Structures are given as C-alpha cells and as structure tokens.
Image (tube, rainbow, N blue to C red):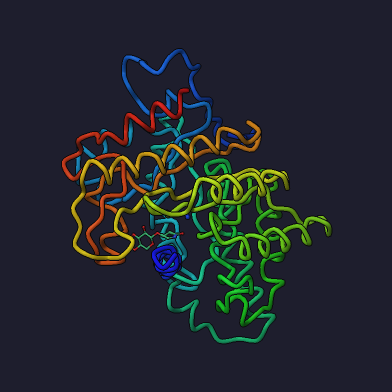
Length: 360
Ligand code: XIL
C-alpha cells in the first residue's frame, strides 16, 4: 500500500512537465493483417489501428539509424516538440513553420498520418504569450488568432489536433493556466469553436495524463466535455497519454479508463505511451524480470485498447523510439528504459511482445 501511494505520488510528478479521416486529411489505412510473422517485421503492419511515435526532430535529422526506424515502423507521427506554441509561434507576429512543414511533407510523401500536438498548453508557451498584456477581449482575440493561423496552415496535412493539453488538476479542478486565469473555463469551448471554424474537417482531441488511474480527474474531464457536447460544442476524442510504470497502474485501472471513455463514444488516442521502470528515481538494474513486468504492462494496455470498438481506435502512439532519446531521462534526470528499442537501437524483448499483442 505504501508503495502504491509512493507510486501515485511519482505518477503525479510526471505531470510537471501529448484513422479516421475525411476528404481533406491524409488517409492511413493499415495494411491487411496476414500473420504475426510478416516478413519485414514492421510494427504498424501488425496492427489494425495506426501505430505512432513522437518524433524528435534533431534525432531524425542527425541520426540515420533513428530515421530508418521511424520510416520502417510507424504510420502515424506526433511532433515531440516542434508543433508546440513555443516553437511554432515564437513572437506575436512570427510563426516558424519550417521544421513542422518538413515533417508534414515527409508524412505526406510516405502516407503517414500527422497528429497535431498541441494548440494550447500551460507548458512550452512562448514568453510573449505567457506575459501577454491585455483585457479579456484582447486575450480572446490573441488565442483565436493563434489557433486559427496554425490550424489553417496545416489544413489537409494534420489529421487531428490536440486542442488543449492538460487542462485539469489531479483533484478534477481546472488548472490555473494563463488561459484559464485570463478567460475562465470558457477558453476550452472557445478554442474548440475557433479550431472548427478554421478547419471544419480536422478532428479535435483533449489530451491529458494520469487519466489511466485517476478516476476523479477522468470524471471531471468527461463531465466537462459532456457538458459542452450537450451545447453542441464537440471534441472527437480523448488522448490518454499513458506515461505509466511497470508496476502501476493495475490492469483493471487501465481497462476501466479506456472503457469509461469509450462508453461516452469518444475516439481514444493512446497518445504518449511509455512504461517507466524507475518510479522511485533511484539507481536501478534493468533486469530481465523488470523487463518482463514492463512487457506485461505494454500488453495490458494494447489488449485493453483492442477491446474498445474499432471506430474509436484512433491509434496508439509511443513517446519515442529508443531509450537513447527518451524525454524521461532529460525531464526527470533519472535512469530509465521505457521504450521498445535500447540505446543502441537494438529491439528489446518488448518490441516482439508489443508486435505480438498488436497482431493477435
Ligand atoms: C515533452 C517532450 O518529450 C520533451 O522533449 C520536452 O522537453 C517536454 O515535453 N506531456 C506532453 C508532451 O503532452 O508534450 C511532453 O513532451 C511530455 C508530457
């Protein structure tokens, strides 16, 4: 029990720090499943739903092995950083499209789905936005401009946007982000309306962490978007980040999370999956038995995801390819091995387990 409490605390720390298609959006059709032993062994080939990864732009450009794994295994990508406000919109009248455009072009050429992450967040905001001066009307106009300029720019290139990232606290209250402080809770519905105005076809997702085990936070999210839906303001899906640990949360919690969201008829994006093996941030040994627990956790998530209706399966995105570049090491300054490939790009046992779970 004490351990679980500690783990919940550490899960909370994570938060300190992201197919359906239509005429305009790129269509990702997973190839037909023949068997688990497809000859070229790529990951998405094994799956009935899109398999994505977060793309680290620098690694993609500078590390050929990284680029090779990216192109081989994934048919959906999310920019790990370069489509966040701080990168795309560094000054009030300056948008920096080059890097994201390069990624969008790559996706188009390879028929890979591009998931947009993220229009609004409390982190990785440019400082001009964080410290913007103006009354409520000026904030509203600034937010509208930000959302609509970006959504219009990527119209037809991005299949879906995370409209808002991490807007709720662990106790279910609204996070006091600049958006909330300046505009009140209506900033979320305004953001949805502005994005839909700019591109009526793009899908919109609400994205958050700890939904996997925190039922209070999950209920608050579902209640809020249910309330908006009743007013005719709808999001298409919910991104469950799935930054979890090898020993927590339990399979039951994971299943409950996905089933509850699916029951409300939202598409689900497992949007940032990784399984940490170091919840206590100590020196660890990454033994076979630890990797087995980690493997079981990946399997639990994928098996639970496979149980939700196919039309709600937007896809499953890993937050990185290789342990070498995992955000966990750089953000939490701890040893960790959360991903499918090791530091030398070698497939871990995890890779085969995941592939098998996908093609079962
Ligand atoms: C992380 C990136 O992986 C890091 O490179 C960056 O320094 C901080 O952000 N939740 C999210 C993602 O929605 O955008 C975060 O990505 C990880 C947590």
